[in-house]
Length: 319
Ligand code: AFP
Image: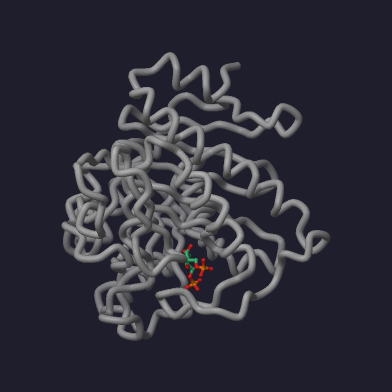
């Protein structure tokens, strides 16, 4: 079995991008080790601050953000970083060639119950003689050169794409190295499993309510088959399930979210997950367009997300 380093070295991935990926994933191993200590290290609970989205920050949100920021700013290949936990982008090395946007700890409210969380990242190529600005990051997801996440679950897993399919790696905790455990991930086109936060139903569009009602009606309704429902409450866990066994994940726009845009962030949640899903044969859309085609207007922009099994995403959009 090959290590991540061996897989990258054998690929066409530019060596500078390999450095950025190794810096990111090695830092995620450190985050994983911090998470495993849990209460013993006094790092659980709230930090008493809010991030730019007005969400309560957990201590581990801040710790994992600081770990990634420190490691990436010290990497000569990194031009700038953007994070869910930083109001503005943070310029790094002007001569660096890569921009990296990340959610340092997705699903952080799961920490309190010792459930799945993860780090999501999205990488763009960018050069220039001046320091990077927010504008430098505002590229559509089609321009991502790599995307992935590290899932801190029963085992620690890295799921990665550099635009040539999706690979899965499992952390060997004794060697502190990611080992390739799946070389080609494929999302089946059809599914009987959906993921959506049903408690928001009354805030959705009428069409989304009808679509979900039809899923719930199962074999007795127009879909003529039963559906199962799962909700991890961490996008990283729900997308991982879809990459492992199929399904559809939906966080629609709703009338209670700011600008009715839904909850999820384009640059460090929707775009990297959309690249992984498309690279595995699935689809990723908002209510009206392919996520990867969106021209971003801000680094913390929110979008509606409908992703997973290609035929089921089409079916949902047909409503
Ligand atoms: P937190 O990181 O603030 O816990 O949010 C996680 C998340 O953005 C995404 O990972 C989940 O899919 C979604 O929120 C869950 O949202 P609900 O609060 O509606 O369950």
